[in-house]
Length: 68
Image (cartoon, rainbow, N blue to C red; front, side, top):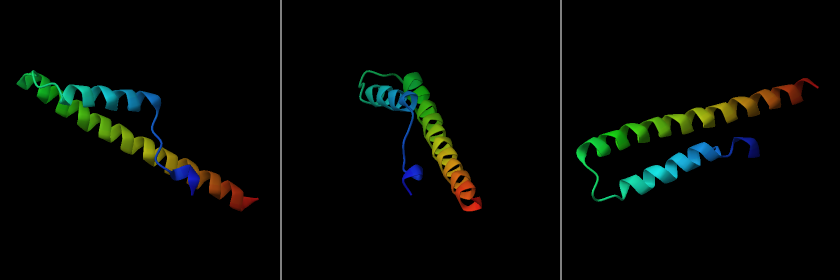
């Protein structure tokens, strides 16, 4: 089902790229690393919510197709 393939928003892609840049910074202190960990967990959660929304939308579209 093509509608349920993993596709993130541009904002999530940008956030992922920024976190990747931060994680390679060898000069980051403990506070920065802790903030990075929290931001990463929020990003993962946002990606999971986005994926769930795509699945729900695909299911709803399929239900509408079956009703016709």
